Length: 273
Image (cartoon, rainbow, N blue to C red; front, side):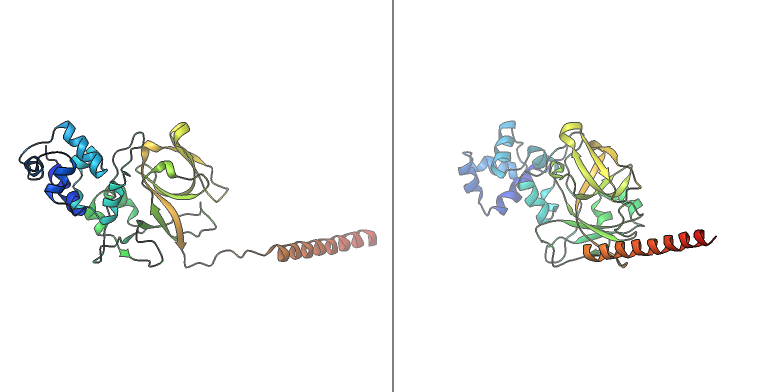
């Protein structure tokens, strides 16, 4: 079976700007042994895998099964920080993404028509590369973002057809109860909800709509494929007006006066009759 161990350890060594002599000395092994690993002349022992995993702070699974030379800079940094976490029922998550000519992460745009294809193409780099892309200079270059088109009124007052941008969340234990997230599952597709994190207690996420007409519901975390933390939304519609408290009180008082005048007229007519 094809593995990427040899190319990965060579790639990681060069990222640290180390020579083979440097790494061999640090790991207390012969330079010829290291050269054999990098050139795929010899296969690593279990102890060697553990040694390289600890030295580069990358899991053995990643060293063997993920071609790190094809990842974006953001993805590599995530893996080097040990963020290729496992959630119960899930697998290693390496996000398919795109970068611009300056090696900065693009923001891919998933419109209403593209949502159906996203269910099968979300992990396919070729599919992701076909999505429209743009940049927002006020967002961090150190994080990954994606924009999805909202449909329906479940998150009203955020209007239907709004564009909702989310920050990619690698570790789902970091989901904060009460905050909004874009959740992607194969069964429900892309949904935008306020989340209650019950992963540790029950292995689920409880999702709420801002619109009280919609009931909350639970999804097993094992069914979740991607989580994006809400950052902002863009809409061509003006939001509903929000009256300041003082103006609201004046409005209520005015309505009471109107009601009193109506009652007075009714009572006057009854007395006349």
